[in-house]
Image 1 (tube, rainbow, N blue to C red):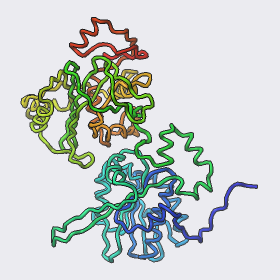
Image 2: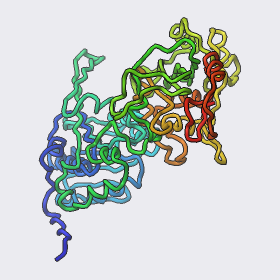
Image 3: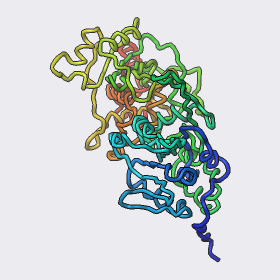
Image 4: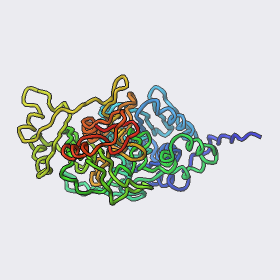
Length: 497
């Protein structure tokens, strides 16, 4: 007897499953994001939402569904044929849209570049859907599409999106929708510049879990097992439970709570390094790092570390302070000039002795006047150009290799630590993704400014693949003065220079 289940009759209209799918299609909230686990029924919810919208409003129902690429649209279109068939909606390949006998229409488009959103100025839709919202590195594209939501017929307009954790836009999606809490309506009030009327706009995040889609589990009972075989336990948890603190395809896949420590007083004799990545319209990043001169015991163990990290190893880098030049919106800068940034640096490190300072080499380029680096020097802040090798050639270690090696460390002991007060590092770096066109590099369309600054620092304190002898007493005295030397123990063929 065959285990293959019959395909449901196309005459049966799609109905939402109880739980999140029903909450999604019934929500009166203007902006609803349905996201989390794979297989949670998110695409069906988006398509079913418009099917109901078309039945209610007929020719006044005009929708736009977008994804990042045309290839990604194909399975959505295929599923839409089944969902829309009972309403006699027809697919028009040339116009890439479904049209209903009532006059309702839903367009399918892809936005492979952020500038593509500019082509929708002047369009009017009563529904906009964005599938895989986290594939868009910036919220600007989405915000431009929301500007197309208007209806001369008085149809209630709405923005709807689906997504999974991970992707170039993970940070801004998490900050805007997920961090506010699940199933909680957030309201923002805008004042009309014309008549002073208060306008209330609402948004809502609905979490998706695989268990919310019993139809999939019943029809494909092997799906969970296949997911479980596809990655680490943490990654499978992200897929099954929609855990936004575990990121699929992270560039720094060895990052863990072990890399985070509580603040402590940095000894005066430890070498201090300042790293800098310039930004004006985009954020700049200043990071202050210390080189551990001798094993340093910790009173606090990172959450999630079963054995904890009993002591910071000699030669490890510790990020003890940061200044991130963002305006509170993802990937948007403070627009401070070099003089203002220099003044802020001097104020923050007053009374400290910073012995090394490395910066983005681009600040030393001449552009017809004093370079940004020269303007910093005149203001009393000096840097030297950092090694900007992102990906090494012919087996050479690159800046990213150095940073990953330090994050991972040896035998479960990292060689890079971050104070838990460095919130922007913890927010942005662990979720960065691989560049899909160059897997050895990270995706530069994401919020990578702190990662670049940290890479400069790691490159100026390299780890090399050589056996490291145990330090002698003479070495120890020399290290205390200069903050350099070998690692605190034999590092499994790694040596800290």
